[in-house]
Length: 76
Image (cartoon, rainbow, N blue to C red; front, side, top):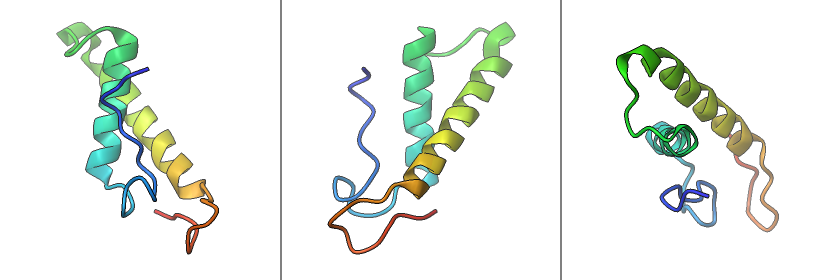
C-alpha cells in the first residue's frame, strides 16, 4: 500500500521499533489514506487523532506478536 512504511518487527528491524518509528509509520498511513500530506486547519484535529489511534494500534500489534524462531516474544 504505502511503500515508505517499513516493517517494524524483528528480524526485519534488529531491535524493537521506537515510538518515533511507530509514529512515523502511522503518519505515513494516515497521509496515504486521507490523501493529505498536511491537513488544512479545519481537519488538523481529526488527522492528529487518526495518527494517534494508528500509532497506538501499531504499538499494541507489535507488543502482541510472537515471532517464531526468535528468542523471545516482543514487548513494549
